[in-house]
Image 1 (spheres, rainbow, N blue to C red):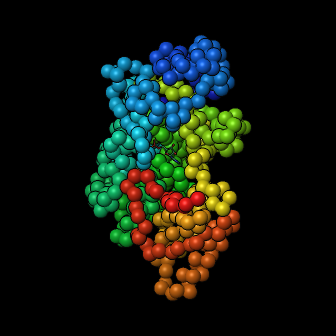
Image 2: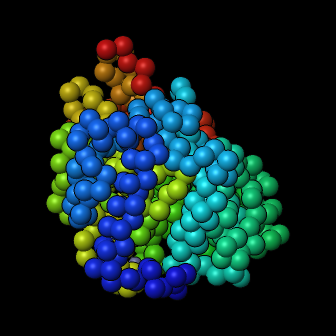
Length: 430
Ligand code: AMP
Ligand code: ZN
């Protein structure tokens, strides 16, 4: 099940030679064409021709989100504007977005990487793909759309939401796989349950590629049960083409990062120094093939680790562990560091609990976790509710060392977002 076996299982030494060649090219190109990098190189005394090994990447400057905002709209462009074929922006809620340009080659490469990513789980041209990512300025939907078309699948550009219509499309066109966010996947699972649809019996759905936001193994299990599918983790970010940066193969055990296109580093986010393989840190990526907008050492702020062991599937591109959060989404509550993922893990592993939750921080340092009850989880007895509430608060305390107030709410009463879920609401007056 390979889209391009020769590159997907290229010997490591050859892969690294290819990476070095592309890194040298990229460094030369940005030095010649992007004033931002030319100035940085001058500041740091870097001669663009002085990159001789992959380890030399560490001499190059980081690129940050702030740099992309500061050079908005077109300061990072490395080709004449008329060579740019497509513009995307990153998702973000406030201020100016990050503008990402693609050349014709970049558009093609992005689709190619998605094609590889789909095919390694067994997708073929016979499959029917219902794309539930958000179409528009985001990369999420268009990049996967063209990837699936490249494979030859029938692609249904459904977008997220409108679950009634999603169900109709899935039934009428025998959809076999979807790409969607974990929050929408959980919502859709609820919807199917309410409608009495048993996905394994009534639908042709077999696989779901789930990504664009962090989620836990517990959530994967919930989605697999609720949608009757195998869930494959899908990772990407607009700054690196969008989806298709790292996906899981049929083993569902870590995401192969396409190393012929991206040079990977994991660093300590505080010191910027590399961490050993297997240890958690911030993912830093350098584009190796991008024409329109190459980026050096981009600080993704995503926290993950490398799985150094080779994968049984035979691919040589190394795997990343599940993203456990972002270096900037850590909450500090009463002096304790907490990642929202820790809370999700407890909730999704608890019985009687539904699929949606929200974390609210108020007042001086009060934390409330609101969580929906499962459709079938509540027998109407108040004392059972109180017991459940106490159990969850206790489990949370054991995990995050702070005891939050737990609020159990009826199913389908918490707000649902079509794009990325907003799980944390911080209204503290500190
Ligand atoms: P965007 O601005 O839409 O390109 O969002 C990219 C960001 O979404 C990444 O930097 C991650 O923080 C997050 N993301 C994407 N895919 C995943 C995934 N599979 N697991 C966790 N976070 C993800
Ligand atoms: Zn594999």
